[in-house]
Length: 221
Image (cartoon, rainbow, N blue to C red; front, top):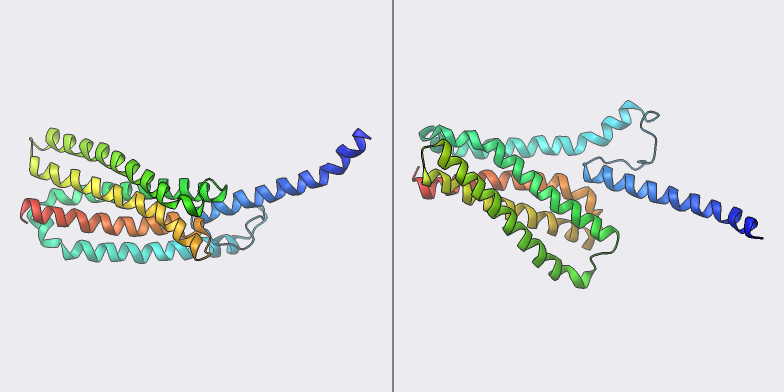
């Protein structure tokens, strides 16, 4: 009888494993901005055209977002013409903005998926992520300040610009990475699909804007 029961449970276990595999695959693909209704197909047996079609939408969106960021940089062209070194930190700021936001988005999407965060716990989760973002922002901002002081002959003003930009950018990116998945779930959109790619786009643009805003205020350029 014990052997019979074990045999009967195998199909159910196989179905459950298949479901889990499909769910994990869907989350991984969505978090990377890959849009495909048949994500459970094996990689090698999926056509090149389907792979391309599933990856292009977010890449095209990212191109337009970066073009917008380029327009924003052009708007502040006079500022970095007066102080060219400002341009050197733009890639770092955009990278840290995207990475910081994606970290929060990934953690929150997973927590929502496995039920660790419920509707009643949104405020508690926001407060926790806010504290995490401040600590991360302060640590990275301090690192930026020290780097400028060492490499730019103790230029406190430039160091302050970089420090405040890193602090503001990381706080913004992480809170956005937390709020977007929750908002997406509230309107019945896959949180993973909209989170990481969209967070990266918005956080990058914010980083550039706040960077040159601080530069104009503190450096007077």
